[in-house]
Length: 345
Image (tube, rainbow, N blue to C red; front, side, top):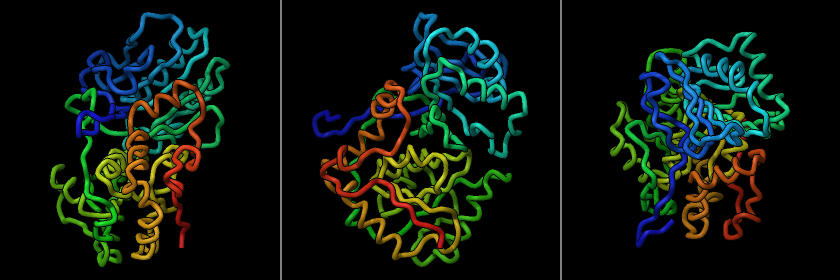
């Protein structure tokens, strides 16, 4: 992870680009590049394309891109699944569409036939485990949430030079709230959260009136102890939550079916976005409890490792469920669990 004085990591990402050029126009990068087969999908023709990343008829790891979710699910269930004669691990992602219900308001929900296909995939006797970005329902032993990580629309680097942010203990105990606002019902949560940030939370929250360019946004993240990560597209609070951790700030996220994955990271969790969910006292409790994960050198190295592609691939390669880790066993120098849940007031 070190190169001289620089900290370097292989970034974790489920997202593939470029979009809207046909399924055969994607660069296979990130998590997908570690898989044997990659089933690509796109809203432009051709809508689906099978990329055999390794020349095998017995793929162990299959990545299914949901850029065109309905085309992707039907193609996989009808064309790929019947041909699989050996045990396989499935990874789905690269889009904000959620599974298994599809709750993102920009798309319709899965119809009865598609829901049956998803159930058939999950019940397949050869399926070892299914890792799903934007999982909207937990509770199945063979399906786990997978965080999306970072997003690189202009091309993904092989390695990422990590920032060297100021210590959390030296930062003002303030909340930073800045996110993109777009039209449509999918973004109502962010509009509601912005009103809270500019209203009842304004005494302890910085909430810029306008969207900020990324360099200015990251500079503000490093000046704040806590960053509000309200979901917009999909359910995953990243890439903002991932970026906040890289820049040494505590992300606040909402409790969803993604929590078994985010429990691996030092995040603060609220049950819902409402006026009583946040207060200076709660920010102080979170900061004090999670401080070792940010300012202790060995704990910080472990957090950065958990943000890497290698960490998540090790779980996937083993085919085991994404369950909260044992923090004491995995990180003896950090006495606190990474996840703190505040119940609704």
